[in-house]
Image (spheres, rainbow, N blue to C red):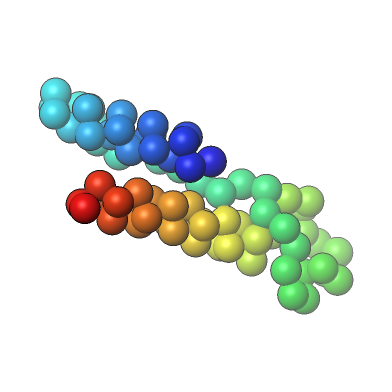
Length: 72
């Protein structure tokens, strides 16, 4: 995942240099059931709220780390 995010960020910077759209959208699909979602019956598998939120946090963590590594 690290390498994929690194390439996406690299491509975003290249696009911004040539005047293109500089943000490549990402979304954390298919998260794990967390907390009381495990017992709910009305959740589509993989599209729970807590798991996707956790996945978004993990994506942002990788992006933050890569950004800090680049600044050194």
